[in-house]
Length: 252
View (cartoon, helix red, strand yellow):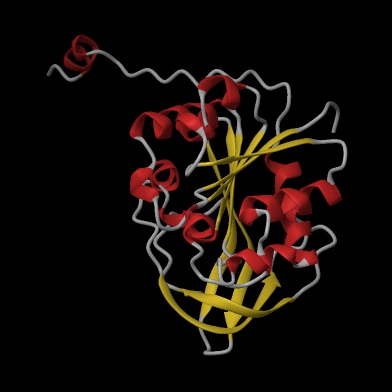
């Protein structure tokens, strides 16, 4: 892929700011966003990787000029979905339709931008007993699965289970199974407008999931797949016939 990729890792930052859970500073001393960015840098050393945090950055760190210079946005959210301004959501939505890649992580399934793009509740079953998760590759031919072990063994993780209220994905790449017997579509892709979207569920704030080498590989693969550097970033033009045309076509 030609050119330097421009990647932005976005995080609420509230778990870190509130020290909740109390051991989050030990797991993620540079924040969840810092760990994600570090993993990406190990796989994409030539990329320009920056971070933004809702809790501290003006305009949520997602100003127009920032998004215009972003090839792929990674989104980690959990407890502050309602705190993301609607104007910011509209801005991100426009850039995704124009071709910016979007990778939505873990509890970001409830983010305003994700539910707006998918048009469903994106609700799911969950419980947090810290059980083992196995992430099985079910579409090994997909670029996001390249070089990824199957299964990825995550010793402790929050359980996400079906029913996951999403539209039928373009690609189902990973399915997770949990020690309690539940299964979950943990890695899926969508296309909206010109933009490529990848949702990947492992990554609760209570566990060091983003330090897992295989999880880091999945996210790096996801960035490579979602990125479309050089694409014309104008959103697709959508038109509909006017009332006069409709009336003319339906005269008897």
